[in-house]
Length: 589
Image (cartoon, rainbow, N blue to C red; front, top):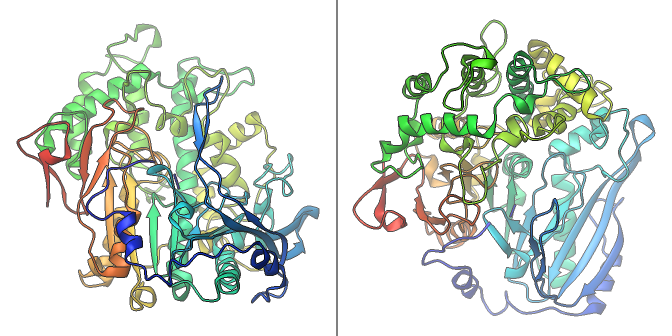
């Protein structure tokens, strides 16, 4: 996870001060680091390819270049870096698989350990720095935590086949699927703890899982399937129903493709250009209608819908009707109206995928301002790049096709299909897929482990007692305008957990919705905040999480604006004061 934030009275410095001198005692021996090659691991197949001591390095800025924004590499403290692997084996289609892991052990250890979740289709070793999506430049490693990351059991540089979905070819291997879903977590956390014990001569006092998106799904798997290994989890915008969410991407592509085809927007390969279904200006028209319907529900008209649960389809549809053209003839469309078929497609997408007999497959989506917003530089792209793709592209470039189609066809259906890793083949699959059949295939057991995609992917258990009875704590956060995983799906899971706990789930789980925020960050949102400190304070000192101050970044319509993020079901109510400051709101139900 990686963003920035205004911190409350609890700071990481305060939290670290709570540690005893023994917990903060530095270990900086290069000899001790090299000796880790002789560690006896719980899994006897484990081998190390690297155990080397690294001196501290400063943060490094990288200027913007054509096609690449400016970025920076966070500073790193002196640490022991370890890379290893386990369970190497011959797998499907002549591929060799292994679970690889990456550990960094800081010289100035604070006695704690962070398991860093992956992202997307994984397959990358990860930097083992423990970044946070809402705090750019801040890392757990930099705060003294030992950190581990992993490729989840497949390597994008090795396990790739252009005839079988490219880097998602691991979906053709039953064990690799299982490890991707959750199987890698247990072996990796045990291996990392063995290294920690060997290097520091003691076990970590607290173990945290931090992950967003697919890493959020992994965090949920961690507390549900390996509760004895973890003390707390920071879960961001989780894909805990990923097998079904991938079908939603097929549904979205087909809805917008029908519009593009009717408008004559067809690519050189003869397939509809999904990204041409709505222009940026069209999306701004739709956003304006949503704001007109719901912006003032929180007591303030400011381009944000903080009372998002009240922003219903019944409120939005009449406002969309006011900006709908009188007919569907593309030649008659004006900049001031949306074609009826564009509005119909938008409503179809926001309603979520259904089978032909009306059964909901995944989830509906919240009506929110983050579908697109005007900033000083451009129109935000975080929603449309997933749902359609960037408008200017002459080929299909939406993430729902480039990422969603290969994952659905290889990983989230049984048996997997062979789809070539090129835009035409992936688009043809996505736009031609039968939604009902894709839903059925997500539930079919397959392979040596006889697991269906929903078995190894879905992390929706509601009985978390093995975790919280040993003191476990969870904080979740999710952007209301996330185009990949619906905030409403997360809220429904929370409600199910609360029902299981007879209305007392707040003892161990808290949730923060971020209005306007897209997938992990971005959008017209105050998307920079420190939430990890609240988790640490809650788990280690019993300080229950309350309102968190969040700040809008430079890529928002209002850089520097602050707002409160309230523990759900509370939401920020406007009150007198500076409308650009969090002090002008108060959390209440």
